[in-house]
Length: 190
Image 1 (cartoon, one colour):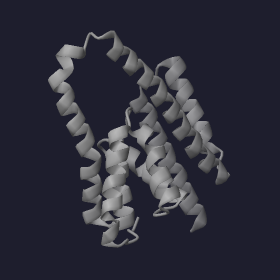
Image 2 (cartoon, rainbow, N blue to C red):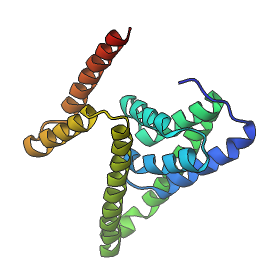
Image 3 (cartoon, helix red, strand yellow):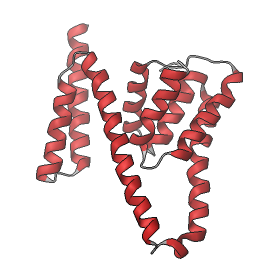
Image 4 (cartoon, helix red, strand yellow):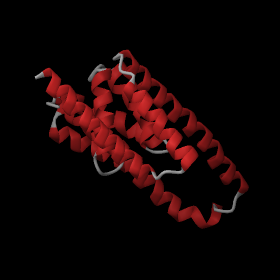
């Protein structure tokens, strides 16, 4: 993925975009992906939807927090290495600030029925956003007219849900299968 350079004047947009998304999302990487995609692919047109799919795939495959990985890759793809660091900082700062404040008041609110109800409500919202992210990624994959990725996803879900197979084994199996299928495609093409 070679970066498509954008002017330095876009740094505030990158920082404020990733900072605000990171500050307002709860639930991890799959929640932030559709918001990043909406901001940087649809509204700002800094990347296309195909590149966003690639960014999500790379972010999942690399160690670390997926939201941070996605933000850094968007920064890299659109503005280069120094801007990837700006995206990293903008994504990490909000949770750091929020968690620092929460640790100060945790003992006072941990048994509050209101706080527990708020977190249950957040879980419902997060589930809906994750479902939306899966749906939009799945739609893009189906536009490519590739049937195998949705089938693999359905099989992985069934194996985990019904047979309680560890997700790590499923991810490693999908990685090996994906590498093998990519090797086959490259061999056929060249």
